[in-house]
Image (cartoon, rainbow, N blue to C red; front, side, top):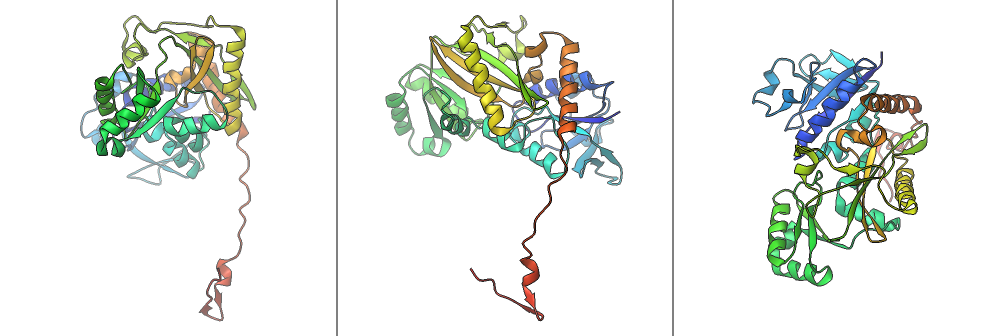
Length: 375
C-alpha cells in the first residue's frame, strides 16, 4: 500500500477550516493509502497524529501539545518524515496532499519544503501558491494575461499610517463608493467588508491592517452574482466542474455563511447563466492552469455583473478540496477523485534532471594560490 501524507492546520487565521479539510481528506484516503495525518500547530511545528479521525481532536488545542499522547513531533527529511527525538525513525512518503488554508501552508511555504525534500506533491507548487494567495500580486498577473478583473487600488499599512486622508481621497476619487475592502493575503471571507462611505472605509481598512499588511480595495458591484468553477489535471488534461452559483442574503458571502450556517450552503449547480458565459469561465480557468502547468484541485471564483464577467480569485487549497463541485454530496465520488489525484501525481514524477557544473570552483586554486575572479 502506498503512503499518503496529509498536511493540515498551521499558523493561519484559517487554521480551523484547514483542520476540517484535512480530516475530510484523511478519512477519504484511508483504506486505499496508508495515511500519515500531519498536523501543523500555531507555530507551524509538525506532529504525526495517526489517530486523527475527528475535527474535535483539534478544537482549542491545549498548551503542551508536544507532550500530548498521540501527537508525535516530526520534521521533513529527504523523501518523508522523521521523528524529532529519534531521527533514524523515518516514515517514507509516496505522495503529499496540502490541506493548509492560508498562511505559509497555502502561500507556497509548504510546497517549497516538500520540493526541497524531494517529496511528490498532489497540490499546486510554490510559485502559483504564493501568487494566488496574495490578491495584489495575482491582479498584476491576471491583467498581464488580459483576464478581466474589477477596478482596484492597493493600500499598504505604512501608507495608511502616514496619511489616511490621502488614501481615503485616492480611493474615493478613483473608485467612488461603495467599495469592497479585503486583506491582501487572507481567504474564507475573513476581514472582508463593504464600505458605503468614508467613515465605513476607515473602519474597513483598520480591520484589514489588524490582520494583514496590505489591503485590496475594489469597486463594489451591487448587482453581481457569485460563480465558482473547480479544476484539476488528470493525465495531463484539465478536468473542469460545472459552474456553480452561490447565493447570499448579504452584500458579500460571509465566513459565517460559508462555514457556520445552520441551514447550510445555498447554491445552484449548474448555474443558470448563458452557455457562452459558462464556457468563458471554464476557458479562463483552463488558461490559468496551463500557464503554470498547475497540479492539484483548485477553485476559481468569478463575479458576473449584467453581461460583464470578472475573475475574482483562485483558491489553491479550496474548502474540502472542492470535491463537492465534481460529485455533489457523494463521498464515493470524492474518494475516487482524491485517489486518482494522488496516483496521477506519483505517476507523473519524472527522473531528476542532470545538474550541470561550470567547474568554476576547481579553477580558483592554482599552484596552491587563490586566483582572483575577473569580472
